Picture 1 (cartoon, rainbow over the protein chains, first blue to last red):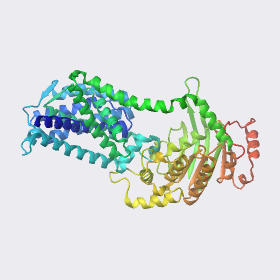
Picture 2: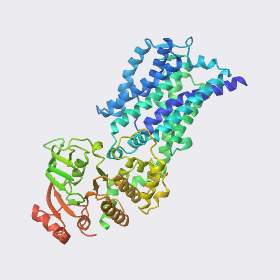
Picture 3: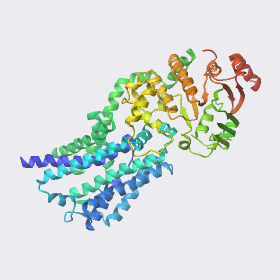
Amino acid sequence: MNSVLAVIFGVLEQGLVYAIMAVGVYLSSRVLDFPDLTVDGSFPMGAAIAGRLLVGGMNPFLATFFAPVIGFVAGATTGILNTKLKISNLLAGILTMTALYSVNLRIMGRANVPLLRTDTIFTFIQNIKVPLPMAVFLMFCIVIIIVKLIVDGFLRTEFGLALRATGDNEGMIRSLGVNTDSMKIVGIGIANGLVALSGAFVAQYQGFADIGMGVGTVVAGLASVIIGEAVISPRTVGMGTLGAIIGSIIYRTCVFLALRLGFAPMDLKIVTAVLVIAALSGKSIKRGIRTGRKEAGCSVGAKIAVQEVSIGDR
Amino acid sequence: MLELRSLYKKFQSGIGNGRLALKDVSLNLRPCDFVTVIGSNGAGKSTLLNVISGVFPVDDGQIIIDGQDVTNLPEYKRASVLGRVFQDPMQGTAGSMSIEENMAMAFKRGKPRSLSRGVLAKDRGYFKEKLSSLGLGLEDRLKEPVKLLSGGQRQALALLMATLSSPKLLLLDEHTAALDPRTAQEIQDLTNDIAKQHNLSVIMVTHNLRLALAVGTRTIMMHEGEIILDMRDPERSKMTISDLLRRFQDAKGEMLSDDRILLEA
């Protein structure tokens, strides 16, 4: 019984700790409508900086705090590449991500930093008198609730509204006097700050920081966001972040089940990719069946002709 | 109010010298001037609005709004003095955000965005009052996302948002063209009311010649990047559509060519 509980808590904990990353991906991909690949680099970056600082003997909470700060810088770099140097959003993310690989190696000094004998947030938690699986689970619950409340609150501020409008209708919010370049830089920065924070927690949770731990983060984050949308079809930002969190838990459950079904850990990336493809194509196949025939019969030219007639009628 | 001093704007095409979209355009708008702009295809009407609002820079000339030279200011820095409504109702509002959030963003036009609450309870009353003046019942739907509104409702909201924080200048780019006739008329009436109420200077691009003469205080006609006709009331009020067409022919020696122009309505 206890071992079953431990497994369930383990999956939930993973879902929650990666949910911070999923909320970050929600911010960039949904709120800002920016396909941000920086995430694959900023996630291990958060792990690297926290790992390095922990090994150096820094207070675990302080070390963890540095992760979002440096993640913000990474994201802002992508934002600047995109807005100021006019590099396309995908390529800007890829460039930052690639550069971060070297940066992360420099931060860690090697490809892997073990944290098992180092004081982390979890050794701190261990000293609190709660049975351990519960303690870690509760801590992640508290962390994700705080993250969600802060992000939701932020998105309802004047600044947050302008940020959301930048993703929704850039021309309109610019005509209302908002510098949309700054909005994107800050928004992508915050998104990657969250991703790096998640990376810092994951490194401490699994007991090591590794240069390869970022591979597939974007896809996992997108999978969480998409699953969340499928489950609760969010209409407000509060529901959106909640969807990302729920999606993350469901996604980690799927990964766990896949492993249980006999997939090897090295197969997990393809499982994830197939999961995302299924979720995405499910939507478009449904839509295709519903509107496919209508679309086919009405070319762009015909649509324009219809418009002309209706204008002429006046 | 608004002064344009011999503006030039050229669009580069892949080959050749490009096309001159604005050629020595000068215009002086007095406060409360309501100018309607007509002209053939590619006459530079939309380009004119785009350079005034700063969507793209001019190649030569000066743009002065309310005594301030804004020629080199980016679009977002000109926002506090000018409001704009586009042909496409989708363009003026953020669909995924609620009516009150859209209003709140417009209320902050041209001001820095802080980390205080976006929609304040004390502003909500004002938003409701403004929305109820539209007579569309939107004041009871503050929390609904704008994408649920009809095109006409969205355009009415966009117009309200463009004028909410009392800009000095209102730019309208065929803002009723995509609406059905009855809604178009309602939006036009609303436009006239708002312009009068806020003492706005207005530049309105239209393809509807009857409307161009019926609305506002002044009409300009553009052709190939130039202003070829500029009429004010009372001279303008005596004009008919056929007078307009004749004046165009006299000026250019050719027929007004616009496949979307409306001769009657």
